[in-house]
Amino acid sequence: MPECPFTFRAYRSALTCATLAALLACFAPLAGHAAEPSRIVAVGGAVSETLYAIGADDRIAGVDSTSLYPPQAQAKPNVGCMRALSAEGVLALSPDLILIEDGSGPPDALALMKASGVPVVSVPSGHGAEELAEKIETVAKAVGKDAAGEALAQTVEAKLARLQAELAKLPAHKRVLFVLSVVDGQARGAGTDTAADAMIRLAGGDNVLAGVKGYKALSAEAAATLAPDVIVMMTGAGPQHDADPFAVPALKATPAGKAGALIRMDGAYLLGFGPRTADAARDFAAKLYPSAIEPAP
Image (cartoon, rainbow, N blue to C red; front, side, top):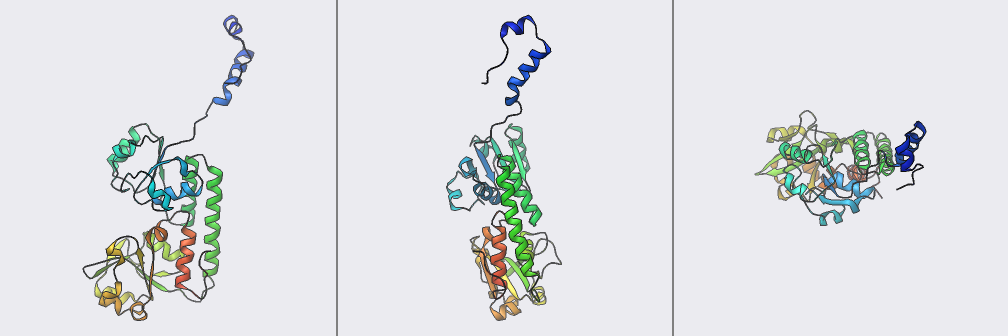
């Protein structure tokens, strides 16, 4: 507590304007001061990854099941699936801040968290370069790491800009089909308004399913008509996602199937849309255009 330039006797005898000004000056350093959060529950893999990247990982009290990177995050207490959260489970960790990526839920659980009095900060879940920067800076500002967040966002944006400049020099772009899963012999592909579509575009590919929104089950006729040059699938997301797309006859008959052109990448890395996104896009592009694009260092 700083020393105050007044005495109780002076206050009791006469609270002059000068004395009042001195009183306010005495406590000014405390005004508006808020302690940085020390027990953060991070919901969303990109949220957790950002906290590690800006050096706030020692304050993480819990994470959700999508928080797989860095591996140390998996040792933190886990509050479960980001879309099936329990307010009681989150609040049981005694957080003083809840960072939660848009799209998490259910709504009643979110309402209970907000009603608890614990600060809840919504983190945008966009996939473009500007949205990525906003996501990173939102997390950083919430934990008092504004400068680190701004620097990280600028690094990600600069990496993406360099990649786009390289991709612009390509004479043609490959036709890409992202297969989310194969169930009972039927593939499910990614159209627009999906993380997969955003990553295809960042890596310089043309999404053959750009004419539809969301994820769509593909008929044999549709698969043949799409005629992708390359098929992309995730790893690390379960057996439906690790299936062989060329076991589907219609996909085997496509240019990708005939050439055996299949790219597999870790799902959290490819579609996490956190601080590693620029590197993931470059690694994806390097697989699409190995003679023109170098992978991330």
